[in-house]
Image (cartoon, rainbow, N blue to C red; front, top):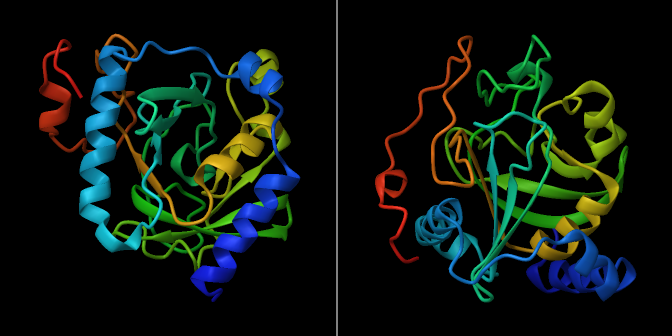
Amino acid sequence: MMQRRDLIKGTLAVGAALAVPARLLASTLPAQPMAGTPRDRVLFALAKRELDRAGAAIWKRDIVGIADFGLHSAKPRFHFVNLERGEVQSYHVSHGSGSDPQHDGWLKQFSNTEGSNATSRGAYVTWEWYKGRYGTSVRLGGLDETNNAALRRYIVMHRADYAEPSHIERWGRLGRSNGCFAMGEEQFRIALMHLSGGRLLYADSLGLEEDGSIQPLPDLAMIERQPLDLLQRPATSAF
């Protein structure tokens, strides 16, 4: 296990090596009003709640990643919640094949079981980056009983061709991972800078649409959505 000092040094090094030019960020990150959409206000409240719940396990608390697997994989459902700037940017992310055996783009179930190839729900801490099968990847540590096998299962963040936007254009959905958080190349470069090195990643089936409404679960889904007071807040509430 890397020491925290070495981990942070490695994160800074990869940030410098993979720095995204300002013009690229300007073209890829959609502008968001500081007040936020109804969905964004819920995401801010959820990010703060999960940071409080994770406590000292998280040592960088400026940006939180929230993966909303209650939405179809063709929709931007991986949210970068920037608490310092009051902004949310959203991208695509793949779910595990074991969570979607029909391969229709909908996550039907979560699992923490080794060999399930399924996505796990819960809070993760992002650890060090390393070179693996998919190139640069980010190790994840599961903080809940529902995802505490993440390290043994090699659940990481990485880039993949099947997670590129062009895959959606051709197939109408993303491809599936083995339970990892897979993203397109440019999206992962941004994730590597924004989320690696001790930040929080939270995964659940929220189904949050931009207007604050909740996407109904597909008929085959075996997921039980947890009742969250956050989701019941009026759309006009402040975050």
